Image 1 (cartoon, rainbow, N blue to C red):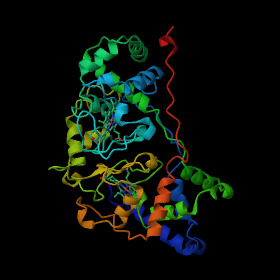
Image 2 (cartoon, rainbow, N blue to C red):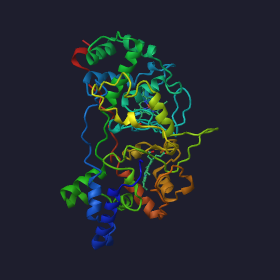
Image 3 (cartoon, rainbow, N blue to C red):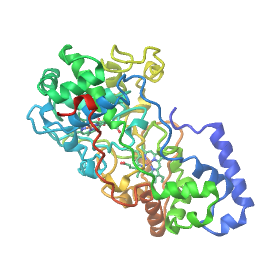
Image 4 (tube, protein in one colour):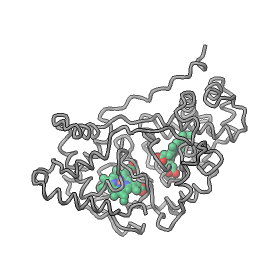
Length: 403
Ligand code: HEC
Ligand code: HEC
């Protein structure tokens, strides 16, 4: 059960309450933190987190594959009409998202385009967790009839038709792109995944505050605005937000139901996680299939045991809360335009809308306008303070440089 509170959690809540009562200074001054709050703040870092290359993708962290993947990410010829690239929807200038409520490729989609910063941290991919690895999540849009409408044959043609792409392919995979089209398609997706693994967001004002607290550097910590501190208190305490938005990437990697309507116009419903698990298990490119490069099979446990259950209906992935100022609108269907709208959603929560069973975590918070603004200020402090430079173009490997 993804969100059932553990005994451990309950114990920590009791401890938190005790510390709060024992710490009159923290209680009296709304922007001071108790020992338990400090411990929980520390758990949201350090940033960036340590990472190990993906064992399921043999070209993960391979420089030639990173360069190949970068070029293919911006390559519209992979699509049926020659006009849709990954970057059409995942725009680098918008945190690799499109600013639209729901995506538009060859046709209109029903889901919001997620940003791709820090995507390598994820455990499940897609709002419904329909993929268990980054490369199969990168293969899906190439073939999806509504997104790029491509094919293995078209992809192989683009790759073989360019001396530069073929060279990078050879450097990455150790042989020329002469394999069958469907093998090439998988390798292309692995290269695109290896480029996306390099997309990391820089530390945000919250990270500097967190690190300053850890160093007990009072002067540096003072730079963090009072409104964001008050919002952080609500986030950790009354809001219970960190139960789901946990850890350095502000997600527990699981799925939940927060009462966002799941109806699709003109008629229909988005089954969310329940449909995602069915798609995952039917997918020939999941980690149980022949293309997983991890010979130990150590990365298959999650997929082996996951089964669609009634409670998964209408659950969606708990998204990261980093870079939110770049990635409006919000939620799986882009139905909330601003962070103010999101906070109001949690504040005025309609409990009748919650349909997943299990223990309830969410209650209407009934925040005042000032508290709403504080929580928004905190959420904004998880985004970079200054505009991000365009992504670094990965250097081509020397053997493939044009003479
Ligand atoms: C038409 C717009 C569109 C195009 C083109 C597109 N995507 Fe996406 N992408 C989306 C949407 C919408 C989702 C969410 C899908 C879902 O939840 O089912 C998504 C999800 C993803 C995810 C999962 C991210 C996460 O946080 O779970 C990855 C990775 C991804 N896309 C990579 C790519 C790559 C690589 C390409 C090019 C090969 C691409 N996308 C092309 C719209 C697009
Ligand atoms: C029960 C787990 C849970 C709790 C508790 C929770 N969230 Fe969420 N949050 C989610 C899920 C799941 C989604 C995505 C829902 C969807 O798209 O239908 C989400 C979405 C969001 C988003 C939109 C992000 C995006 O990129 O679209 C924000 C912002 C957010 N939550 C902030 C908060 C805040 C602030 C709190 C505390 C008041 C909170 N959450 C409490 C699970 C939770």
